[in-house]
Length: 248
Image (cartoon, rainbow, N blue to C red; front, side, top):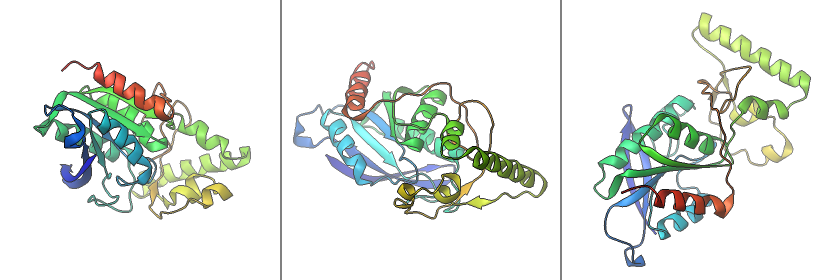
């Protein structure tokens, strides 16, 4: 697998990405590649080691993989204190556009892969809003954020959490500014298991909803109507099979 540092612009911010392609000696065609775009999971970065095995399998099958750092994360430009699902989705849409500008990519054979709560959820959203994306595989997404957050809490904690969201909503309307909170300590309940994985102090904007399927409780709530849950190597096989079926 070959890895190249690339970049493109998303609403004026430079997005840093890795473009991974098959080894030249692997015997794959030198023609245009079917391409897959990926946004990292919750607070993740493009060069996370856990993604390498997926990319090795996909490039070995002849695909190109573009994995990005969302704006404000890693090597990308942007506000380090803001995590916005709307911005992340736009970064992915613009990443698809970037792929269509590459001479080595078949613009009619682009898919998306995502793993984890945010990564998997954003894969579903991208496929829903961008008709250029011909296939999507979402592994272990958070598709109903309200239910996910509710299950972490005792009922009285959940009611207090909803009240805090209501107060923040009013403050954003009347004062023009909401609270900044820690994404693991205040959005997710800090259980001992989660405390062991805290590795970021990025801040997170409140948003809220009380009904419907949502990706997560965030500044911009985007409703989804389905969840795709593929696991492990089976999701890779499904992605290869589906992408292979896309007409060239």
